[in-house]
Length: 55
Image 1: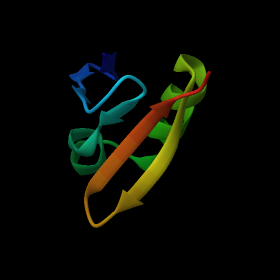
Image 2: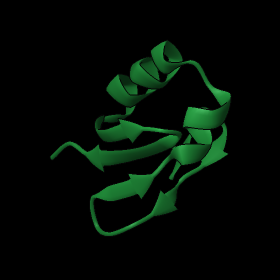
Image 3: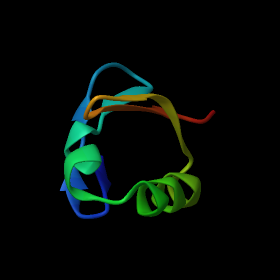
Image 4: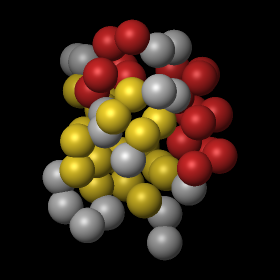
């Protein structure tokens, strides 16, 4: 999956490692992109970001 021009790493069927976004993008931009793409933040701490597909 791609978000804000970055390729996310698939963890399992509904979770993605998006730590690259945490390093290079502003949190507000990440939140907007998640809302537009049906994603939710399940973990955000110390440069690590895990997203989940909202079903």
